[in-house]
Image (cartoon, rainbow over the protein chains, first blue to last red):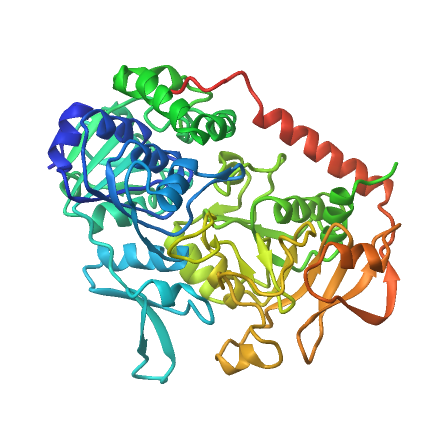
Amino acid sequence: MAEFVSLSQGIEAVLSDGCSVAMEGFTHLIPHAAGHETIRQGKRRLTLIRMTPDLIYDQLIGTGCAEKLIFSWGGNPGVGSLHRFRDAVENGWPHRLEIEEHSHAAMANAYEAGAANLPFAVFRGYKGVDLPSVNPQIRSVTCPYTGEVLATVPAIRPDAAIIHALKADREGNVLLEGIVGVQKEAVLAAKRSLVTVEEIVDDFGPRNANAVILPSWAVTTIAHVPGGAYPSYAHGYYKRANDFYIAWDKIARERETFLAWIKENVLEKGPDAFARHAQPQREAA
Amino acid sequence: MTATPTEMMTIAAARLLTNQDVCFVGIGAPSAACNLARLTHAPKITLIYESGTLSTRPSVLPLSIGDGELCDTALTTVAVPEMFRYWLQGGRITIGFLGGAQIDRFANLNTTVVGPYDAPKVRLPGGGGAPEIASSCGEIFITLKQSRRAMVDKIDFFTSFGHGEGGDHRARLGIATKGPTLMVTDLAVWRTDPVTHEFTVVLLHPGVTREMVQAECGWTVRFADEVGETPPPTELELTTLRDLNARTKAAHSGTNTGDAA
């Protein structure tokens, strides 16, 4: 059964120096508060796994938490570069970052394979492109029925998965709605998990029979962190802060402004700082 | 009203789309063109974003491929693995709409690195969905602003495969889809030649000369035997696009100056 913990206890429980972690959320429900707590706890040598590294990994890379990045698209969506990611790859600041690069289709398939307890994922892809020549993990298999050569990548099996969800009930079941990304797959593929949630309710109430629910016995820890996805968003609670994504470009462009922002907004703050972003815009679905 | 080159590009790209199309939409210029088509001549076009939103009808252009607006206005939203497996790999998308940082004359695209992969001069975001969009969609449309930096003789990295070295290169790799067939820039409309698969200019936008197209292209441009002129934007097209851009700008700007958390 999932254990209810504080955010700091949750990060301590699922992360240790040198482990691999997938903090997932496809634009929606990105676990930013958990990323900040990881920085505050000074975790080191992490292998960060995520389809779209986004601002959360820009911050973890820029503060030196990451040793390796496994990813498929490393930009600030609709804005431009992730400058801390670029500085690490182009200039080795704050230290060298090893990268393992895939396509979205490969990573989505690899999470599914991990959740399904398979050793690798098979799909039709990577034809004619250069990624297989720089990523030796991309290989192929010949279909035993048709003879077609298909691409393969290893299953993603992180030590830990960290996601943000809308609700947990008192028994520790977790509900996600809206753009659900690969979070269910990431949690089921991982050895242990932390889910931060907008609210804890007595009962989910009326819901669609096909709602995305992670049962309590499939989750390790849950922390109540209202607003914990900001500047990403929580469907029915608060919108994506597109203005902050635009502002991040300037903040992260220079090392000094980045470090000053981290000091003021991460190191000198706690999880409760996210609560002010959790103002409901309409009744949650 | 006179259109800017970027507006002309978006309008000319929108005109390529029809009510029958099921379109996988990239962010930026493709998203603007697809939604302009939906708001003018192709109200029944099916737009799909890789965040899992099927048949979405946003009233403002999303900043990211996963803005809440896309989910709120979608027919349904599926998980990302399902999007790539059932819908894209499943062969249910007719048109993929892509942009890119670098392109060559055979429509191969680079959004990964400028310079060597292991020591890049510029590290770009990478492929995301593009490698499989380029091979799994029925055909590919491309839109980008012309410059010698973007349109190059040789791209630094094959992020997504267009027509490789030209000719039947796609077929030789066992790729059954058509690949890139059309490109709209801020100066012209280009088609890939049915045999060589090299880009060929078929329409020049109003006021644009062959010399202007060549000046912003890093390879020697081929022109069709008969080059036409893109019809100028109608008032409806231009007004709809400007309204869409104004709504989008208002929606994405706010009072937040960077004090997160």
